[in-house]
Every structure is written in structure tokens, then in C-alpha cells.
Length: 219
Ligand SMILES: Cc1cc2nc3c(=O)[nH]c(=O)nc-3n(C[C@H](O)[C@H](O)[C@H](O)COP(=O)(O)O)c2cc1C
Image (cartoon, rainbow, N blue to C red; front, side, top):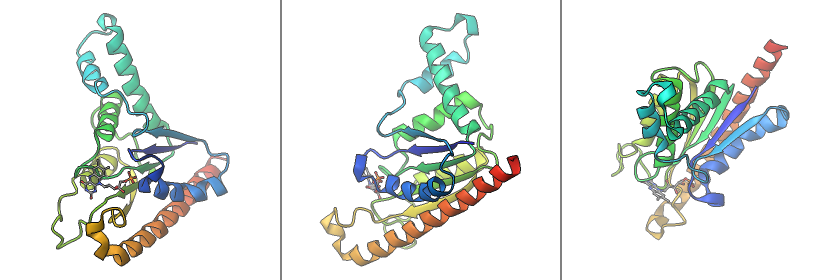
């Protein structure tokens, strides 16, 4: 059994999404200490930006005529898809940048789709926790309502295209305390943070329950 952990933050140790994903992982580490965790940090070690286009082109070239570059791109795409297909569960920490997913996250998704096959449910029925963090506020009635183009896209890919049993933990207003223009939201941001942390811990407990149940069924 393997848990796939993917991080997309470009903010290093200051990452709020990675901190929340750590909370999701805590019950798994405590209750299933031997559970292997495969980590891919897309922000720290981005996948090559040109690999997807090369892999797409390579799919139209007979196998024995592919260049080394095409073979490398296809094998990377297949490896990324296999990580999803072989995982028993996944924890994904993918922040909002410029109102969408980062290029790093998009490159990962595109490679998994070309490597695994378009429309193939790589996460069929598997428990997946998606952690999303946003600097601003996007709730109903706020000026930026509807501007988060990442979360609906990620829900579509993870739950509908890849078939995951998806739980989403969201924390917004993370730029309060960083951007002085948001100081009036300090109390609200503190509540939002606590709620998100509680949700992350609950999602981690539920994930550990599922993994323990899988392990006993397999024994
Ligand atoms: C380059 C960049 C672009 C960002 N764009 C947005 C944005 O469009 N909307 C938003 O609400 N916050 C935005 N933010 C703030 C991040 O969403 C926020 O810092 C969040 O906590 C990022 O997660 P992380 O701490 O795990 O990196 C941006 C931050 C950076 C560094």
C-alpha cells in the first residue's frame, strides 16, 4: 500500500498548503507507521515544462522511430500516471496562484493524462484529500466570488476524470498578516485557519480509517 503525497507550493517552508497536508498525514504516520509515502514536490522540483508536448507528439510516431527525447517524455508521463494508478490513497496540497492552478500542477496533470490515457480513471474509488489554500476570500457576495478557477478544475479532474473519492479541505485569507490591506480580516482569518486545521485532521483520521480497513481486508 502506498500513499501519494503531492505538493504544489512555490513558497518553500512558508507553505500553508503543505502545513495543512502535514496535518492530514499525521494520523496516517501515527497509526500506519510502515505505510510507504511517495512524495512529489511540484513546486520545488517541477516536471519539465516541455515534456507534455513532446509526449503528445511522440504518441503519433511509431515506437521504433521515436527520438530519445520522445522516449524520455513518454516514459516520464507513464511514470507520473503509474504513481497515481499504484497509490492506495493520495494527499494533494495545491494552492491557488493567479486565480488558477500553477503551471507546475497543470504540467503534472497533463503528463498523467497522456501517460495513463485520456479519460482513464487513475484514482478510481480511492480516498483522496485535496488541500487548497488561497490568499484572498472568494465566498458568496465577495468581490472575487467565482474567480477561483483552480478548485472547480481540480474537482473535475480528481473526482470526475480520475474517479477519486474526494475530500476537499480549503483555507482562504492566508495573506492576512502578510498584506496590510487585509488587516480588518484578522479575526475572520484566524477562525478560517482553525476550521481548516480541524478539517485537515478529520480528513487524515478518515484516511487512516480507510487504509486500516484496506490492510485488514488484505490480511
Ligand atoms: C505568485 C503568487 C500568486 C498568487 N495568486 C493568488 C491569487 O490569484 N488569488 C489568491 O487568493 N491568492 C493568491 N496568492 C496567494 C496564495 O494563494 C497564498 O499565499 C496561499 O497560501 C498559497 O499556498 P502556499 O502557502 O502553500 O504556497 C498568490 C501567491 C503567489 C506567491
